[in-house]
Length: 204
Ligand code: MN3
Image (tube, rainbow, N blue to C red; front, side, top):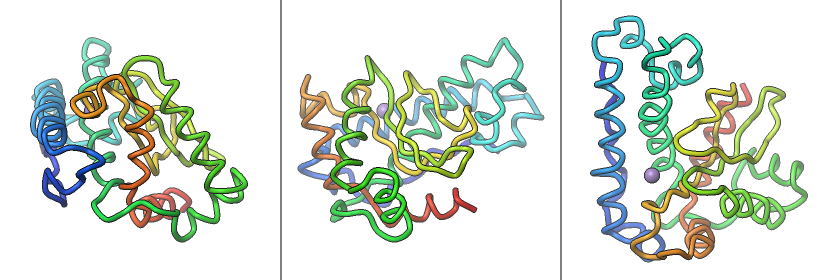
């Protein structure tokens, strides 16, 4: 079954003033949609890939035929990374982490403030387009990392629980070159309930 562009659980203007309406509209309706369409076009007619989830395909990139592997990596990555990004942000969110992930952050980084400094640093220093992530790694430990382009930690066997898009299209209309301001604003919209849910699943 073709990958579906997920509907947002909030209106395009619901993340104001942290993410502006126009950015959200274009980012979801145009950029994300294009990744989804191109991913579906790339695997169309490849029965073995069509029956797998996009996440499973990206976790097994070495099994994807070489002639379409880069397209799958880029467009499949773009499809699933954005779906995750929309799910970990929400209106009237932000604040401190909740639940098990709050305890894990405290134990891994000492405090939420220390975690925030490290996560922001990863997002700030990702050179060019890419993403910063909080993942559960193979040892079931939290890890902060960054990836270029549309690469996903799923391809390295890690399970993402929080992500920020630092492609310029994610913030340029409102913040222009001020990526750091966008990253700081992002903490006002993190959906910690969802992050905790993803963390709990990843630990199982
Ligand atoms: Mn994007």
